[in-house]
Image (cartoon, rainbow, N blue to C red; front, top):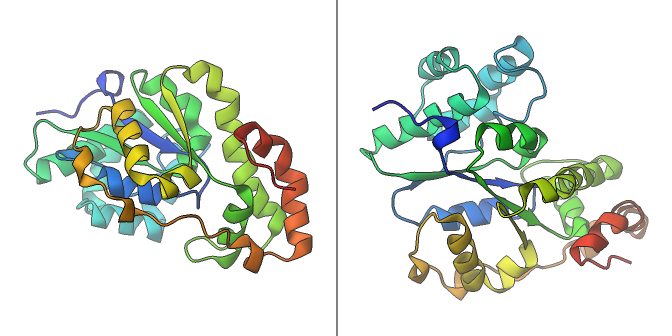
Length: 256
């Protein structure tokens, strides 16, 4: 059975700023039966045209992405074949997911992609997957910047650079909101951690990725710790507040 065409697919894309809790939501959604989510793909992240060296080289050579595809069961030689068979980013992503489904013996499956940085290709995703739904998980930028400074997954010591991670991702989605009307769900990370059961019920209803609400418990998440108090200096907190407040206020965050 050939992989589905992007235009006929109905996936969910989880987008936004890194360190906003997307991994938590991914892991919870993966509990649903016959639902596939690859490790982060980054297929829509890079700005160079698809199949040019500027786009293919990081996909082929990034140690992180090689590890991600290893977890998904896609060998380097297989990925190269998939890449050369694909005419677009969307076709490559569909082949990636279909390969995982075949390895699991699944013919009827649903899927979603959790790659926050794919937000940079949001218009292309929308064009290639017109039936897709989108989840924007937004988190207090003070805690995002603090997490980036700690560097447990991604380390960013330049506070302005860390701010830009949040500002750019949230700005892109904010500018696209009217075009995504009806296909976009925005949720606060703080709501997910405080009310994980209700949040997952809401997401399942929106995404149509399953209906097994009984799989979730209040113990699935812990409330936000607001680690920025201990991680960011007063000067650093001031930078985040000055730069992020205009956009954060649109999402209900009072930083100052």
